[in-house]
Length: 157
Image 1 (tube, rainbow, N blue to C red):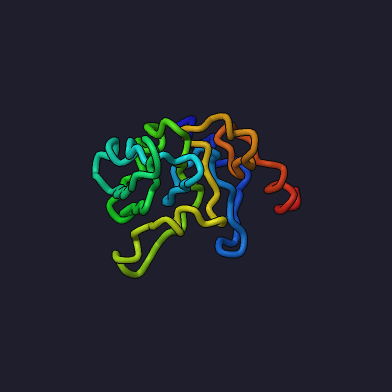
Image 2: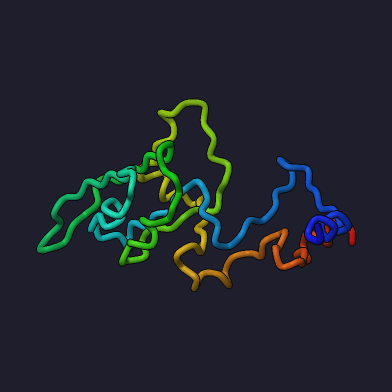
């Protein structure tokens, strides 16, 4: 009952959703992936660690003991966004994204290919990469009982 009373009397924070968006946690496992082709060696460790087998990688030999990634595809419609692929990548080439708005009208559109994974609009999360925490913005509604300065300024308090 104490927990209920604690939250009953705290200041209400609301936003007008599509116009104003809250900052999510720095380590969110959003519904997208960010892939860095310059760091990827095509080892397919991420695909091997995926419990659902949603990652498909096609590589070709590029010189002596070097591989070039010809295609990489994620079936995000079947993905449970557990993050095991990000944790397994030995070259830090794969990141979880921060976007949580990935709804589509058709399941056929839920496949993420190379162009979508490398899109400049994708923002990487620090999930599995704690060294990135300082570079990302603070969460709007912190669970620590604080409201970020940006949100307080927007609400006029």
